Image 1 (cartoon, rainbow, N blue to C red):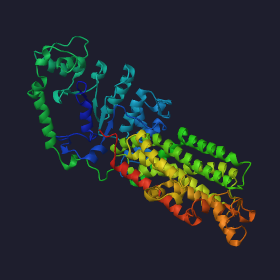
Image 2 (tube, rainbow, N blue to C red; image 1 turned 135 degrees about the horizontal axis):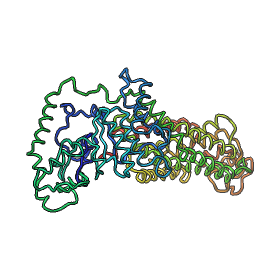
Image 3 (cartoon, rainbow, N blue to C red; image 1 turned 135 degrees about the vertical axis):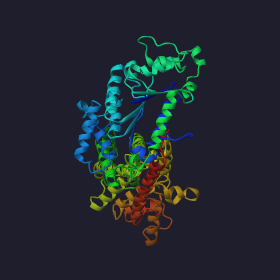
Length: 596
């Protein structure tokens, strides 16, 4: 068990990131070798684990579910020894090693909602990496932020991991005497990355103390003094000042026998490199694509079921909007004039707009949490972006369909729409499409942009354009020139047209024209041709000159909203969903906002 100590901001975490292949920015030089072989990215990630300083886990899962998922994804399923039974036994062993068995069914939780303590989360993060059965496990400051008791529990777990035959490499910041003496070897660096000491600690740090005290510039360690604080002060890396800074411990180490012994060991390992000790894997991931898809979907399904703040709220919002707007028509279920028609069309427009905006905004923070978790899982080669993208799609669909059904049941019949099955189905279909499009667009934007604020701001532009150019605020016949692109590309137009023409198709409800309206003009001209009214008639039309609700939709929207477009609207919605998922797919594959 080796640990790395440096002064603050001297780069120990950066070194750890480089060794564990988590560093993607800056210039990296030199070589990293494993058993004398040059480090190969996929194989090295497969045989190592990396516990970040502030690692997070999914709040909706239990400790056991979290560890079991890691084991299922990272134990090689092509190995005949890896069976469901052996995996469960290994999970049990891992939980016992980190003293998590007693609380294995506790939800991870969060700081806001409550859950595991900080120390328990640390041990869980270690267990998640240990579940991959790594040969080497890296830990970035595993005891930072813990009190003495909690740090002792974490260190006991790390000691058991090392005693099981695994190499443990950790960075430690200001360790206590008890923690310091638990390690086997030490890499001490000074600012600039120069090695001051690398070797065995010895019993009660005797080897380290003997090495440093051999130099005349080193003051003797006092009885009971923390070897960690003493060595940092002696080498000029701590808070001490004085004559010690004049002595270059890094240069002295480079000329020491300890350094030469380390080089000989490295040269011996390099010389022993052979095919027998080459660690390699034939595939990038430990599991097949089908196993990844199945496991990630099951995990995501649990997350959804245990996220009432997301799913329950959007269902309740759908019901409230439906009842709020639908109750307006409870006593006037049949339109009789243009005012009634305008009222119904506007209510349809507002409800789908509210549902769409709510769907877009509520998915962003939920997706961001799991997206950031995916970045960590992807770095550990647990599963690929295809499985993640597919899981989010499949997990969302039932909840979208359910909330759309709740809305339609509450709204559709209150307004007094047709009881014909095909009309209800079409209305339900376009409401569901509306929810799905804005939900999947929210996923795409959250995959594409760094944070919720940026995604929300970008989405507001799309929402604004879509609401303006649905064809209601500005009727289609009056949109021309430059802004035609917005009318033909924004989703609001296709959803509203689908909802209106599906409901008022073959609707022979008589609608009284309002004087001077386009609907009045068309009906007046038709009656003038038949001789019912004179050509210069300018008053309320007689009942025989009134038209139907279907006629009103046709005239009001300039003949642009017609029944024949239903299949076009359907194809557009499906294409929009596909494009949104393709954007998510590309962003998940190529972007990583947690990269270092």
